[in-house]
Each structure stands twice: as structure tokens, then as C-alpha cells.
Length: 114
Length: 112
Image 1 (cartoon, rainbow over the protein chains, first blue to last red):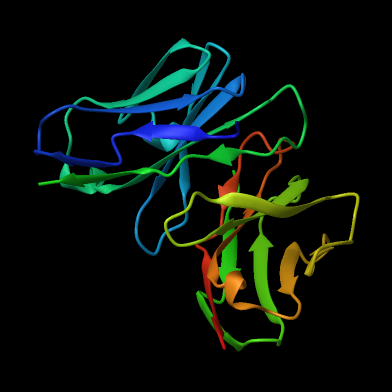
Image 2: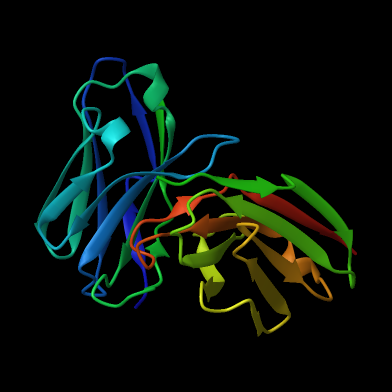
């Protein structure tokens, strides 16, 4: 099974409220990624977990949190949503121990902040 | 860091013709260049990739070319079919694929 699952598929949030997005995979991949995709923009890497080590991109460091309670699950947390967080959020996973490993993507969660 | 520019944003081609998408990157240390295809309602999927030790790679109607001097790589779809209609993303990585910088995407529309 090469499926990456994301829940929910659609999320409506109010400005100032928290948002928690979930990703799961059963491929025993050691690395999980979160990307943000806005219309007419390239998917942008927000952060990734290698095993239990979280790496956040410098320009999104304070905007997103994440947790990985076990190898299969990874969450993306927004403490206080703003209008600018409206986007598609894509989760991916790979085996980082293997160089040039394919990243497997989930279907995405479309977040709309009102 | 890395920046990847992808052109064109939309590509309309006649069935049976070829389609070409071009990407440029900035970081000379980038060594891995995958291409992802996203069909409507589907997840992005890797279709072909090329490493910096190669200049050309071909598989099942797809050709990728890499020009390291020009920091340019391209995808060529030969004999396009309706099933090739999709969004295509190029990407570059300087960490052997562990961090990808994507292009903005190209929507390919194949006319019957």
C-alpha cells in the first residue's frame, strides 16, 4: 500500500482559531513532509520530520507546529489561523535513508479561513 | 536555498504531438530533479527523475534533459495522449531528494 492519507479533506476555520491537520502512512517511511500550495504558486515546503526530528523552514518557523506521535502519523498545527493560511496542504512521505527516494503525496487538505 | 522557475504555465497540444516543459534552477549544488504529474482529483505522483550525473533519461514516452551549465532541465512528452492531460511539476533538490523546491506547475491540455 503506497497510500498517504490526509484528514480532513476540507477544513473551514475562523480567523484566530486553531487548526489541526492529520496525515498518515503505512509504508514505514521515516520522513514525512508538509507542503503549502496556494493557487498559481509552487508547492512550498513548510517542515519535515526525519524520524522524530522536526525540521522547519526558516521563513515558516513561527507559523506552523507539528507533531509525530509515531512513525505513521504526522500533524500540522496552526495556533491562530489568519486569512493568509487559506491554501491546500499536502503531506508526503519518503524513506530518507535511501538517497533520491520518491516522495509519496497524499490528496491534500483544502483549508479555508474566514 | 533554491528557486525553480517553470514555463509555460499552460500548454495546449494536439493529440499525437509532443509537449515540452522547461525549468531553471539557481543553486548549482542541486543534484536531483524529479517530475511529478497530478491528474484531476488525484495525488501528485513521480513520473520520472534525473540525477546530476546524467544528461538524458527516457522512459515510456517521457524524456528528461539536464543542462547543468545552464541550470536548466526539461520534460518532453512524445506522442501525447488524452491521458497526458494533467498538471506537471518540476522540482530540484540539493540534498539527494530530501528537500524539494517545486516549480509553479504546467497545466497540459491534450486536444483529441
